[in-house]
Image (cartoon, rainbow, N blue to C red; front, top):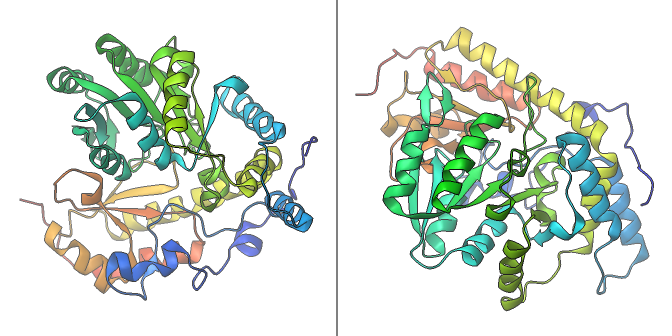
Length: 406
């Protein structure tokens, strides 16, 4: 595709794109027993959408499939151009083609960069609560995990920069894994916050890897700022991002590493070569290119659905369960909810899973060795599913007496 191909402008996500996923080998819908011990739960955990991908993506895949040949392929030039244009238009960040590298998903990219840029037993730092594969990546590669807690003020999370700097100094941290926008607390970091983090890392020679996979999912006037766009930090950072969260393409296993510095690229390339990591799937390239070229109208409609689900959940819980704290949603489609006024940590799974019949991500998964009363709910689903989930929580907790965790 050389011309921009827009998907159908008149889009009704709830009516035309919401799809039944049970029985399709969906991890979210069909993998419940392995994760939660039983089936029959309403899945609101895995961070993918219950919506069909944009029409232009499905058309591009159909054209490719129609050719009928699945042999060796080169990476299309249009794939790079579509991503470069998207970054400039949506994020004001000018990416050069030579900076771009392939990863088989952002989580794979975390592992690859940790191996490429650090040594065994080196310390890697994350801000917690954080998407738990960050912790897995550090532990699985034999590095030392250092966690620095965000400051929680009535559900709004900020960074304690003094504590962040002390954690780096005390542990001789070599790498900082930044989540931006932050999963699960929904923060879209400001330019000042990003610059403060990067300045501290620069002071101590810490390499920064910024996971920006949720960059396009923002609300309320908040806009993601690429970490590399806040100042002169190119020689100490790389960005990971993808079309997967934006356009529901996670199964395509196609993500971007943006590496502005030649020396950093060389280290990454040596790791890739030594591990004989090949290109991605031809379908992944075609899907990403089509999405970036023509998927914007679809995305805007999806954002409206997510925002509507968030508003409903927030209003209903405020009205029916006023002790619940729902973190403001600046970015991502994942809402972070504290049920601690009604539920003790030991009761959380029994109430949410067994009484409410919900499959959610539990707060303790996002910390290192800590009990917690948060749940994370995926809003990228039908309004009916969100209404059902909220009603079940209200019914289970509405008659309960609030208590504070001792």
